[in-house]
Length: 594
Image 1: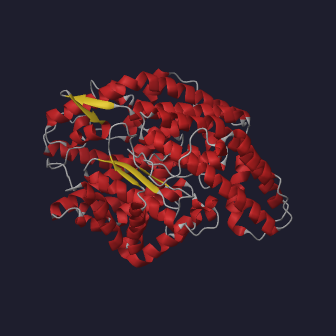
Image 2 (image 1 turned 180 degrees about the vertical axis):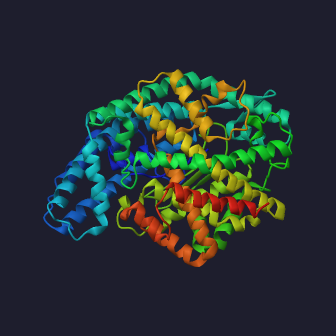
Image 3 (image 1 turned 30 degrees about the vertical axis):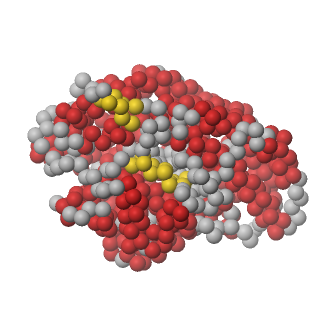
């Protein structure tokens, strides 16, 4: 499932946003800045002095306002990048005690102060803006609106609660990051073990499936305890801010001004209606063709024609080198972006023990070059993951010239549009990885099918989170029961889960977003639909579509989601009719690959 996270402007402060909603995990670059917990810059008095000096500046003109905004923007960028590197080291090496301590110091000592101080800065910025100081400054209208929403929900008593939530999220990360799988007396990381689920040997697939499930069962009870505590703390935060529940609180906190919870529900229904039947067809055909009766969870990843798994890399160097070639064929600028990251050693691409799972691109404002992290194990999906993250990286580079760092962190509906579109528009160039036509078509077909699976999984996870926070007093048993109902609603109905219910009921525990970035997930579905629309345009008019795509991404957070999508030449629309139209296009594209 998707494990990549984007930047989003969070309520408690724009600094916390980068900390809390950007949990991009990566390996520390040799050239990155490193500070210890004793570094004077991060002691409370020194940080307080910097904010006091900034707060004391008197604004008497439009230029004075802009200078004040830029000074705060730079201070935020410095603090957030340092926080980012500490998080990077901690998650890139989950067993490293010093990295854990450095991260914990920042979360407990620095972050609470920045949250409180940033709120005062926002109040000053909104006050002067409201008095008409900046009428002509149209590019900051969206930022001011974000700040106004942040002020509506900000409560100082929530700062300590959020710090505690950060520690709980860290605990979850450590538990999951430390998992290993044992099969036939050999030890595997989770990504390594997942590879075996593609094996043609059904007995091997089953053995690894149970071994992976056993690993997650070892931490399941502890994860439930952590999540129960998270739910109650999040609900308390919502009540403090005057909201009925955490769901409603988060829609304001995440600045979701372009859609509502009801819109999300309609999207879930449309995906159930249009996508699930296709997932049933895929599973039914595979089960029949491979004589898999009953069709079990460990049969889901094996090739539909019973062929050996695609292993496209002849060496580790192939992954980066050939991905750069793919990007350059689409647009030389795209390839150059990845080359710059390679030159700056801003890449950590392969799986290893003790490394947190997932893949992501981490924008770094001060460094000026983002960082890509992933867990490659030589599968066809590694190509998609790197291209996806490269899409985010290209987006970061396209926003380089924006005058404020604040502008360089668009909402996730926009950020994910960049990455998911990159996956689709590069598909016809994947022949660089797959020399044989059969393997090339097979990879594209698998990807399109996985996109449909992603839409269904997004609906499952998002529906689950709506229920969890609308019913915060639920028991663990009720939570398991609700998850199973939703899972069965959005997954294929062919897979036989008999005798495996205990595994099914805790599948949600593997989705890190639920723990680390609550309510961030529907964005993947929205952006995926947008990416399909852009891909459809690209097939008709590649040059014009690319120009619009780049222009839209270069807007960053200076324009609304709808404006960005319109600039890209598509609609910000996830109505039932539009979803049906896009899914039909994917279905037709799949038929051409048969």
